[in-house]
Image (cartoon, rainbow, N blue to C red; front, side, top):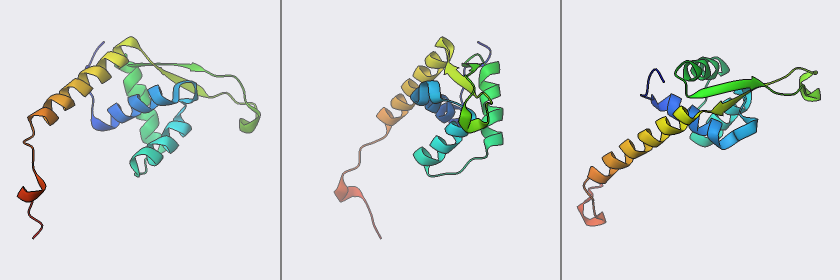
Length: 113
């Protein structure tokens, strides 16, 4: 594993690959990103992020079976590696640690003016 730090976009892409499982191909990941975040992303940025995550050892990929909907072309399917799962766990624990340090606010302490 080369790099263990994840940027926000990389983290979301890894999470989506894990959620989509055998349906985790670039176009579907791009669609799911928009659905889950409400933000658009180009398929090019998703492709480059997927390749970067492969280089980091967090993903692998393989070609799926040909499909009629794609004129017989195959899709490249992405899968989380053990290192990818570990990177997500580390990221989750870090974020939880930060949230646990955030002071609690009651409704009475909030100012709306």
